[in-house]
Image (tube, rainbow, N blue to C red; front, side, top):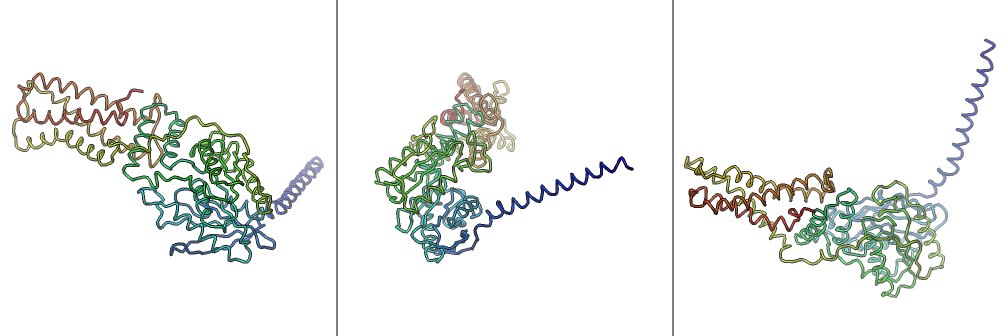
Length: 483
């Protein structure tokens, strides 16, 4: 029993020490972290824009007002106010009121399908409506309301600022200097290469001809919208930020275009800054694809410091901060130019014709079976090869458009083999087989056409016609290119 007493004493002392440490950590948390997060209050606000009631939340710093304020503008797609809470809380904790709001769903398609389904000018009107609502509040300094926008919002912010003097400053983050379809083509190629897809055939098919098809079909909202004129018109102090590892918008290319626009417009108070190890969303990322939840180092501090200087009258002259990022290739300008063979209607009709010609082989077979009439001369039949050509023609035609549409929506390409996604490799193999079978069946038909009965001759002529028409279509979509 005596031997256990020292052990029990030590055990009690250890528990006391652990409890004391936990107590100190709790005091430290509530005196720093908790106090920091409670340094602002929130208020839900409604405002009207184009007869639409919009909802948002204003994060108001503690302490006497009126406060400088920043309105946060969404990137492309459907977004709620909560998606930008992290940035808003950073501004609020630094003494800047931050307003976040739910993006409109009326007059703006989140899917982006349809050329008229989005409007940058409509989004800018929402921003101006928010400005008008906020500047009437007693706790907001009306002469110190600024804008922050990410990606698409990085272009909407200067568009709104160029229309009013009520906006004091602009922060544009990851804005694209090229039209949306050109930017998207560049981004898709980055994704393909990141997935170890190196085959030129699929890269060119999806990022060049595929984008032209979407443009011609008007499936891409505001595909050719020019984001640069607003940068030429904005006169307020502007901070333009790009991440070093942006793989969505071409940072180097956009920087050059935006800088030129600001200079042409005579803006004498612009700051351009590049954030190391930051992706498109300004999260920490070493490659631009895999990201951490935290922001890249220096990003938030650069914004709050810049705003403090601007509202205190220390407006910087034109300057570039940070190392200008490298860019392997420019975004493809050639996709903006459509030719007659890029017509969406042409491709739709072409697809229907191919399916009809390949299907006729089996359709006529089915009709003749019902009529119990003779189908072919067994001595001269090449029916087995013809059936393969018909089936592969139908599957490849439908399979290509199905695969293309699915990848555009899901960004999933399938397992990669020898630099190609497996579905693409299968489509290419079937296309080469269609090419060979068309030649072989056509040669055989020409040599022995007098031996075929009428029913079989008609079926083969239609089938061979489908194969012949398939070849230029497959070359257009790069399915017959081996590299």
